[in-house]
Every structure is written in C-alpha cells, then in structure tokens.
Image (tube, rainbow, N blue to C red; front, side, top):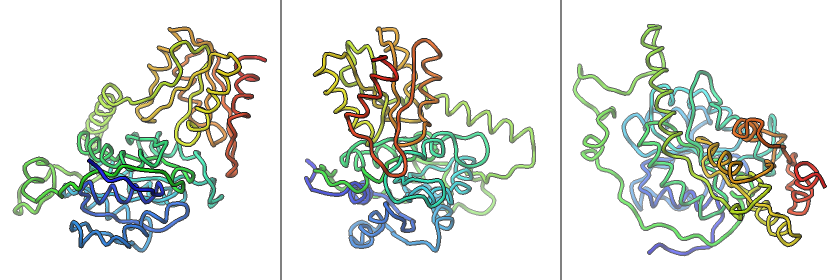
Length: 361
C-alpha cells in the first residue's frame, strides 16, 4: 500500500521521483515549476536514497547534465517551465540523437517569450513535434491530476528506458500548483552498477579503454550512416505509436459530439459533458493521456460509431487541433476553442462553444 498525502502537483512529482529510485535531478527554478527543486532540496534525498539533486547554473547546463547521466544508464530527470524548456531544446535534440533515456517535466506557462506565470497549454508543439532541430520525437504524457503527476514519473521512466528516448511529462501551471490527495508509491531501490551493466549494455559504465560504447554523440559527418540512423529512429517512433497509445473516454458510448482535451482542460471539459447531458445533448470527452503517440485511431473509431463532430479544448490558440483534424481527415467537423493569457475557460463557455461551433445551435 502507498502513503496518502495532500500535496501540490509539483511536490507529488518530486516525491515520486525519490520513491521511484531516481538517481539524479538537475534543474533550475522557474515559476510555476519551482516547487519541484525546492521540495527536493528540502527533502535531501541523498540522505534517503542516495539521489543527487543539483541546481545547475542554467537550464542549458541542467539538460546537459541529464544527457551525461542518462548515457551512463542512470534514472535521471529535470523539470522546468516553458521559457526554460525552450533553453533545453538543443540538449533534448542531442539526447534524441544519442538515444539516451530520461524524463523531463514541463509545467507550462503562457508565452511566447517570458509571457505570464499563469497556466497555459501552448507548449504542445514544442513537446510533441520535437522542439529542437532534426526529425525526432519525444514520448509525451499529459497528467490531469496530482495523482497522475506522481504516477507518470514511474511510467515515464519505464517508457524512456524501453525505447531509449526522452519522455516529457507535459503539465501546466494549474495542475502543478493545485493541491489534491495523492497515493504515493512505496520506496523503490536505485539500481546498482551491476544491474545497470546487466540490463543496459549500451550504457557507458566505465568499461576499459578500447571497448565500444553504444551511446553515440549527435555528430556524424558520414551521410550514409546518418541517414540509416534517422531511419532507425523513425522506425522506433512507429513502434511507440503502435504500442503505447493511452487515452480515456468519458460518456462516449453514445456520444454524437465529443470534446478532445487533455490536462486541466480535460477536467473542465468533463464538467461541460455533465452540463450537456443535463440538457439532453449526447456529448462525451476523449482525453488523450499520451500526446505523442496521439490517439488518432480512437477518434476514427468514434466517427465509425456515429460521432458527428469534435471540439478541441485547449489553453492555447490552437495546437492539438491540428492532430485532431489529421485524425478526422475531413469526415466530420473538427474545431478549436481556447483561452490564452492565463485565462482559464469555464465549463459553461466550453459547452457554449460546442453548441455554436459544432452542434450549430
């Protein structure tokens, strides 16, 4: 049995990292994510488990520390908020090219630029489309509760090591700052050096000079090898799309119209579903849990079952809507509704948007 606590989302993520047996966290404070590193520093996990926590001199330094530690087979993570994650993009692209597993959390704030410290979901493109250079993707998990902020640390590391790639926990300022009950996992031991060597033969674990390591750098001036490596990465991403799609359907069994929303927007849209049902409207909610891989087939299945239209609800000017429209492929109507600048939409205005833009009332 786990331990029941009342915690902020950021704190739950930090405590879950300790309990999962994370080896190291390298970060830098930025609102609305600063509680992650503050909580870790307060807990002093080195005394509890041997976990290293270090505030780097910058976001760029932090992600390169993650790169190095991950290459040695360690469970390593970082976190930041939108402008800070932008600074990490070069390192994340290096990590993708070198196939280094790691977890990073983005507690999204409004932008562009420094923007606002209020909640936003406008980092969807940055997280899901490969925010750095080159053809790469990261696995992206979208928590909609404090409990999932904790749970997705373990899931993130599981997927990161399974596919040797970065996994992003894409949260937002509302989920990061809200307080809810959370059941924390039992303490898991950190892996020993012998276990790392046995389980991850690619890891750079101090082998003798002259032996080959399988972790590569991102630089290769041989075009033939670089093309082959890129093809290999794309095949891996296809495997992720086939095997790791996660989503939740709420009131979709008979739904004629469906909201598509993740994170804090999904919590609001779920209330909008209740309001719609009370009016006799057959409305449901599809909540993507993985944003990459995106649940495109789930949308197509809903159309096959009779859904007539979709409304993507986001705290942005419209980013996830592009993936919704690709999945719909012109078969039914798909539109976007969102608020920006730190303004969070209400269930009533979300329902009103569904009526005007999709149902046609």
